[in-house]
Amino acid sequence: MALLIFANGVLDEVEWIRPYLSQATAAWAADGGSRHLFRLGHLPDKVIGDMDSLEPDLREWLIRNQVPFDQHPSEKDETDLELALLLAAEQSDNDIWLFGLLGGRLDQMLANVFLLSHPVLVGKTVQLITPTERAWLVRQQTEIAGEVGDLVSLVPLGGDAQGVSTTGLQWHLQAATLRFGQARGISNRLTAEKATVTLEKGLLLCVHTHN
Image (tube, rainbow, N blue to C red):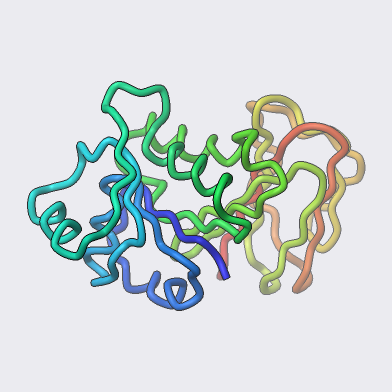
């Protein structure tokens, strides 16, 4: 079971999300992320943010159905998604699944991805989910379950990732250094249904793309 959080990014299709809703303990929206749940006909359990992205029909739907608002001033240091993650880290012990983080403004999209490395999320299981991908942060080790041929990319964040070792991937790494700003870890492939990644120092963004 997981807490689902919807950001105000681009989702061309939403029906693929419906099975995830059946596994959710709750579904929260970061401000305009409510529109994705509106399209699914699924009320959010909470809306967090400054509410500047709520179109009139969306706001009316939320108010009419008495959805709680966790409202913040528009002049704030955090994005709406960051506020939702801070609240989730404080209130929930469940896994956190994130939707609608990509597309639209490049600055917002990059900030959304980098939020996976927020200090309050250390020890939490947080995944960014798209129709074909899952992405999560690796601090020490992780396991990747999928099908042979699936793509796996390992992207260092915030500096070099040192002592990176893998099993179950086509291009094997053994105590390697993946340099920040270089693309060496992109587009590896699963050679088994399970792969492992360990590292001694740094952070890796693991992106698993399903066939």
